[in-house]
Image 1 (cartoon, protein in one colour):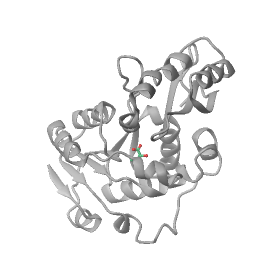
Image 2 (cartoon, helix red, strand yellow):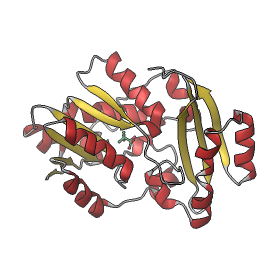
Image 3 (cartoon, helix red, strand yellow):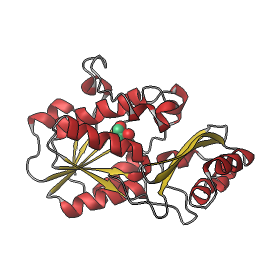
Length: 258
Ligand code: PAF
């Protein structure tokens, strides 16, 4: 695996051809593994990036607590068959100091966007930059961040970018908890409660009842909402640090709206 720690270095020797790209913020888990495996299976070359993008963190404590497992991540990517790992820095990604931003003005303010000011502008801006640097044929995103996937997919269409955005199904623990890098920060008690989110949103209960039950179990609930044939949840559990979890499931009987 070739490790490239500079954007200029990547661009001056940019891999060409049928490239699959998996952008990540590190702290890799089996969800990321599934994206990489899909890219490796479908592409001549797989490029991954690890970049903890500060502009998408609305809360500095969340950024500070974000897990860092770079040594293990590199070994994992290499063993999965990644060909190139891009490890950019802030000044390389944001030579403009984040003066230029990609903003979506509607859906990005709903669901998570209603609770995380500026989050999706940070995501869309960094993804636009990474796609322009890497120039992949396909880029892979997990459906746990379903709103992110939809916003990126619409951005690509809107700006006529020549890349296919490939959604990949959520990978879960055996108790139903959706894999997330943030799960590493769950203390034992919160980890025990965390699968409740998936259990409840997969049940017949209505959204208000689910929110009530989560609150009774110690969660702070941002939203339980149904739209586009899915039920979406975001809730925070624990104190040290508080861990915000998101999840979504297709609604029974509802066709997927793409
Ligand atoms: O899903 C993520 O890990 C991040 O939001 C992404 C797409 C790598 C952009 O920083």
